[in-house]
Amino acid sequence: ALKDGMEHGEIYNQMGLCQMAAQDYQSAYDSFDKGYQVAAAAQAAALQEKDREADKEADKKDKKEADAGESGDVSPAGGTGADSYRELLKELSYNRAAACEHLQQYDKALALFEDFEKEFGSDEAAEHEIAFFKTHYYGGIRPSLLHILRCRRAEQVGDRVGAVHYKKKKTEE
Image (tube, helix red, strand yellow):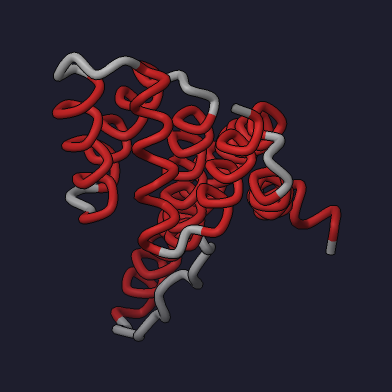
């Protein structure tokens, strides 16, 4: 199972989520990024395999129809799971951007959230993040204040990771 997870990227997503919970944001980002790369490569391979299978099925159908003028039904190629990679890529992409935000790399986080929307379409959570960055960070609020606001908002909406981080910073001051 571990080997399959590493080949498809899922294990990196799980590792990153654990690292986020442990407030090891750099390691979390690295895990999400590695998972994204692995899943993207696996998706590309699955799509190529799906195309090869479709070509084989089309060749079989053509040959069957040519032989004695018979018309036979040929079942479509089986699913390769390429669509399941899209969901994993979507989750990894979002998590990667969230990790950058926790690292206070706001420009990079904004760019990743915008890339997320370009690749996966409109998403309420990503739209909210983009709007927040544009109105707060680019609206002139200092990055350290932005971080405090984000953690307070996380506390209000029940994001335990963000809330714990805020409380830890508050007690350090």
